[in-house]
Image 1 (tube, one colour):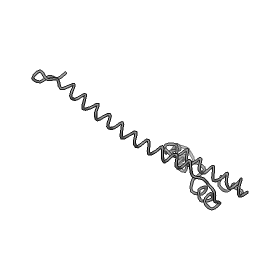
Image 2 (cartoon, one colour):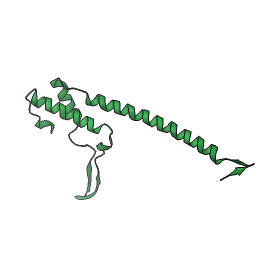
Image 3 (cartoon, one colour):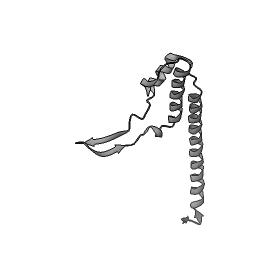
Image 4 (tube, helix red, strand yellow):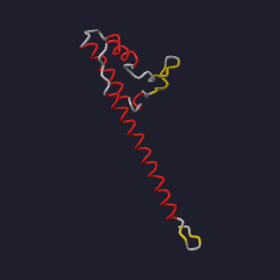
Length: 116
């Protein structure tokens, strides 16, 4: 404890720190709320048009395009893991692609092998 002229500096500093932490928590809650609203919006997108379904199926890849094996002279020296799962909207995009492919098969009767 630091004391100057019989005044404690710990308590005011602690109160200030708690106030700043509460402000940071409030800002984080607002950001998470916006992210949840964006997730809900993506989950609510309905696929009702074949052209839109084709666009979604082409736009969203079937597997993560960033995953790679690093090969030099025929030997694997490293691996870059799939980074797509770090995307906070990954599940929503995969679900939207799945709904688009299901629409093409169920409603339009089209073959979707070219998208797999």
